[in-house]
Image (tube, helix red, strand yellow):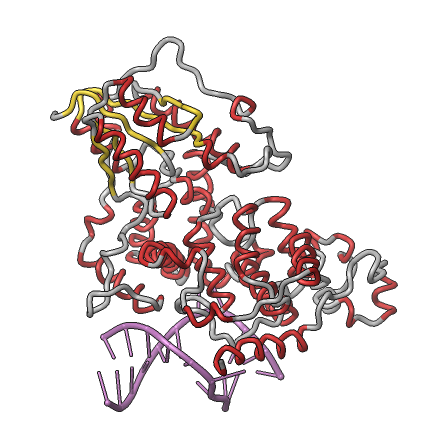
Length: 482
DNA sequence: AAGGAGTTATT
DNA sequence: ATAACTCCT
């Protein structure tokens, strides 16, 4: 015990179990307080019914309840974290603030500001690795630099994990819970309304640690088939855990440990290593963002900053149609409607819609990325940016620019019977599996029989894919010539 | 320095 | 079958 009072600052790690900062605070302090701040700097830009705020509040409530069951509680504040945290540390006379590291540029700036203020008052901020298995400098090429291609990165990541199994050891908290400071008699949490938000009509299902547990248990049953089934949006075979990794209601160490065990005993089938690779992608893009923060606004490969994306009123209208799910390409539109109505989009469809915006509509990837940032429940700067730059062919390890997704081919291949399309475009539901991928090519009789009037019930395609493809090839060739 | 390889493609 | 480019070992 070296400290009297300490404060654990929860941010995107809304859980009790396997929590690095909480673990270290409990082991080193006599009295441990916890706090979550609804940061007005972040909330200011969000619509009043943003699903993520509700998810956060629900998860915060569960975190408080779990801490109380262990003898502690969670302080919840609403304000600018950079001011609230130092003020609260002073109020509690906490010598040190403990937090898990966050690697996004804005979070790093915030934490630097908090650190300075705390330091000026003779307090400290201690941060820990928790969000990832390996941080930006822990997986390097033989030359000692960062990777820019995924597969060699993944191989090095796996090698390091094999060498360092303790990277997965859980940070125990419950056994040390005696240090938690008990709740005062008047302890209460704010309501959604008090934060300035209203409920969303279609909230995110299953928030909090218990929600994560439930989804994980369900996914574990599907894991062995993940490698195959994940490509079919209608099967809903993906984990749906991304929002929980985003807000830390689940520990990534635990997921990787589970995968290792199931790879070792064979029960993970072909799915487990493939899903593990997805978790490595997450860290790959976090490493890329941490190493190259300019990718937030610029192409990873600087030559591609010269790409002349379309803009002006026509491009604006195309962008609006894409956002609204009115492009006339059913798979693209169904995907965009899934995003709008649920805040989720299947990963294959993220690729299809991103390719469509950049390669078929010729619109700057940053504009699509901004839309996803606004809408995605699981929005994460590093992954979203990496995915968009991959689709736009401007990123590290990007899709080669001459490989352009054909939205109809993708539709036939990955939604062969049109089941996913039908979920979101009921006006096309009576079209056959063959016609639903490209209604404008259907025989007039087939459309009439299905009760579809193109241009009325459903739009005609806003671009011709073959022509758009040629334009995109020329757009990219132009920067080589320059 | 040369060879192998690259998440998710296309016709 | 392709083979437009680049990275990593």
